[in-house]
Each structure stands twice: as structure tokens, then as C-alpha cells.
Length: 183
Image (cartoon, rainbow, N blue to C red; front, side, top):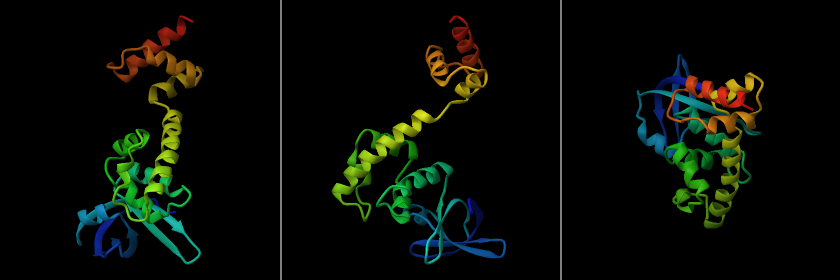
């Protein structure tokens, strides 16, 4: 599996670039937005998704790991192919895009070819649920530390919500432990 490529843009085409890594050239599809940012001879680092199909293999690249993770979430949805997922994933800052989706902002997908009004609406609905579920399943470093000490996720989150959020991570854990010790 190809996850990361670092090299020089050898060729730039309409929908992809050829990135030279050593003496090998990889054809990598990137979004139009990212394509506009690159020129031949640029040094690039791409986080990649290898799409294995019946007709062959294709590599899709993103400029950040967050963008790749969002791409993989999108690409896994029914009716969304990798090229459309690539365009959506690179619309803007991933966290801002996710927030707009959670807020049911249909305009976020305006101008992406292959997405009609009905598909945009169903996509926002489908994605908002997945994003909310994904964010509720992610654990902070503080939560992980408390869980490793034997507390449940719910207990850890409850205690951490009661401490000052402006203090550093170690202090949050210490304060949360004090709260958990009072129970």
C-alpha cells in the first residue's frame, strides 16, 4: 500500500501529476485546487490513497494527512467516487468544511461537478452523522491517560469537562484525578 510520496513534480497534466521519487515516476491524481498550486520541478509531499480496480490501480494524493482522512471518509460513501471525493476533501480547511457540514450548509459543495442539488443535500445529511460519530469516538490525550489508569471514557470526559480548559495537559489530568478521587 502506498501511503506517502515525496519527490519532484516531473510532469503536470490536466487531472494529475507525475511525481518522480528516485528513478520512478508515479502518476498521482490530485484535486484541481491542489493542481493549481503545483508546477513542474516543485518538491511535493503527498499522502496517498491507492485505489485498486478491475482495470488497474490509481493513486490519489492529498497535501495533508487530515485531507487524506477526510478523502477516505468521503470515498467510502455510496455514490461518491474517488475523483469527486478528492475535490470535496480539498475545498478548504478540513475542520471548517466539517463544521459547515454539521451546520447543514449546502453551499459548501456548490460548484463541484457531479453533485446535483439532491445529492448535495443527501451528502450533507449522511456526512453530518458520520462526522459527529467520528468526533465523539476520538479520545484526547488526557482521556487516554485517564483510561489507562482504569477510568471509563465517560468518567474521564465528565471529570475533564469540570477542569479549567486553559491549563496545560498535565495539569488537566492532575485536576481530573482529584475530581475522580472524590467519588
